[in-house]
Image (cartoon, rainbow, N blue to C red; front, side, top):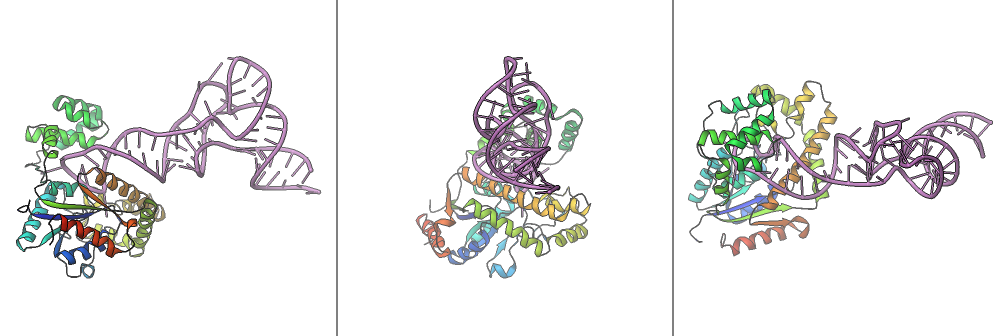
Length: 316
RNA sequence: GGUGCCAUAGCCAAGUGGUAAGGCGUGGGUCUGCAACACCCUGAUCGUCGGUUCAAAUCCGUCUGGCACCU
């Protein structure tokens, strides 16, 4: 137990207050923060991703924020590699990595040391997409049934992205993705970790989300998106531009959506997103739910967290 | 006081004789290289009472509520 490296995770749905708490916690446990956020990795995507400012960091080192141009693509495999490197550096400095961010998928990859293997794009994915367009998703699904019946059983035929991914995996690695998943999901984490999930009353969370979107608009989100598009010549197909609070503005720019409606949609989709995050964290193993409403002050909340870290031998 | 119109799930709403579309919201869930992605599941017997009919949300009457107009 004691020779395992330590790792603290502080996550929760969007707008739950992760950022603020993470700074306080980092200070108290001598940690450096590794962001597990699929949007904050991109430079110049600040307002819409609610990115922490350098003042707010209060001198705490932050990693994996602003490391990619919006023209580049982030993905889990890449995140896992990069974040692991960060952790190693942090450990070498005798400090604790504090993983903060709302992308559960990324956290899982790092925490359970999921192996994604090597992969190069030989155009098979594009071929499958074309096949789907021409012959329909049923044809694609039939293909998967032949290649990997177990995966086909788990993936809904309408979920074209996942069907394609399963097919690509088999094509590239020669192994069925269902076997890969089974093996990887059985892994125990190699770390001595504590996985905290911030939560609060649902109605309150939704209120905070709505409010935050309004604030983003006041801060000039629309202008941020427009200048991003210009600076990097982005279009809606970029991975970075699929982010909430960004993708919606493409319709505003081409005139098919008015601004007010876009704001409404961003709020709605962000609420949906928060719910999905909660669903994800709910089924993750060994998570410790930190219900904001159960504490009257942030100090109490912090103490609760620190007590657990102490019990687990992560701090002394 | 009179005349007319309306009354379908939390909201919007389709449906004019054969046993209730859809959208939004809500809640639940899936997820192992796009994950702030993609995908799945989730609700009523049609204001009330009575009548006509084999059969009514759909036709007739009653009451209640709302809206409009008139005196």
